[in-house]
Amino acid sequence: MSTIRRGLFSVSYAGLWGQAELTLEDTIAKAAELGFEGILFMGKRPHLGPLETDEGRLAQLKARLRSWGMEAIGVAAYNDFLLPAAAEVPVDEMQLSYIEGCCRAAAFLEGPVVRVFTAYEHSPSAAANIAPNDGRRKVVELLRACGERAARYGVTLAVQNHHDLAVDTGELELLLCEVGLANVRAGYDAWSPYLRGEDICAAAERMGRHTALTIAANYRRFRRYRYEPQLVNYQRCEPDMVRATFTSQGEIDYPAFLRALRAGGYNGWVVYEMCSPLIEGSSQEVLDAAARDFLTCVGPTMSE
Image (cartoon, rainbow, N blue to C red; front, top):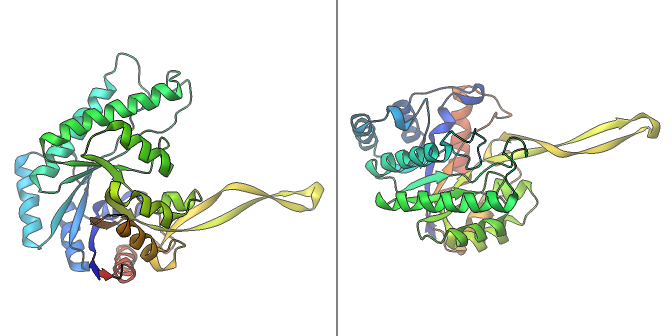
């Protein structure tokens, strides 16, 4: 048997998507009361925005964590390395500075991981006609620059398989190889490869040794159709509509995914998030019930 360390992503109670909102201090208390061992901080307002989080504020949060017997897992940054901007705007430097601020906060809180993204594929006009290879090269260079800064704080970057660039498992593995830094690893989640049709267990075992963090959410897919009157029938439309739901009610087999990830060499946190509207509702009671459901589905121990 191996032990799973389960954390809560504070975005779950940040009041986004019409959901119930708690302060960061109350979210720490909520996570502890529910039975989580750690918390991943959302690295933006209204929770942990680096601009308004000085050492005094971080010291308060650190004391709050200790008072509840909680650990900081790290900080989740929000970036897009191909974000369109006018040529004279130093958008790359802005994002590097922001991510370094997240690393500084994570190190102070003794949470060794900062989650980062790659980039979205923007329209050619919006992206100033950046060629795909040039965009990829830029993302690699910026991830390497972020990794070098993170290393100064003893922090590991977890590149989540979320944004368009390198969302495919094989391409993400290649991207990490191209960056070539030991502290730039994967933030490997099940829901993305599942929705895109990959074999999540095979992919998880492959990526386990590269992974620094995994974030869990479960979903149900709903097929869409368009009526074709001349055929007196329906035309299948893609992609499916997807809605978040309780872990026990979703389509992703998390115990199997986590066993495969662990078999591949992963031994880090499993972090639960409610980062989109839940089918069941948006009240604090529903969010609490969903969090407890996750803890039931992903127990503290599991067989390898």
